Length: 113
Image (cartoon, rainbow, N blue to C red):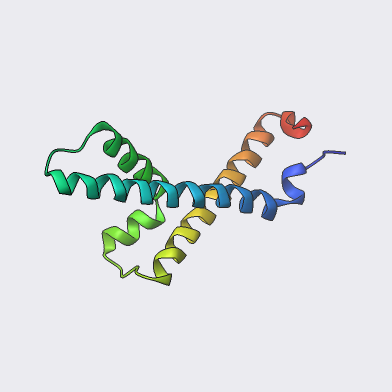
């Protein structure tokens, strides 16, 4: 009954993973900006919280957003959000492919999930 579960609803799986990734990315972006702005008021070095938030955002923004920023492509307004959405969809697709690969390597052991 659960045969080829990852093959029947890839859009749902990709969409769910992309949605969670998008929310985490936006949250890390906002928190990172807030912690960086408070540091500018005092002029001191970054604290551990700011470093962790910036690192988490850098990981979540890889590969698409970091490439857009590196290339200095204008990503303001709606274009900025499209970068976030595209990056999240890329992560969702990659996770779905990894789940399918892992399932095929394990001989269908994930069918009962």
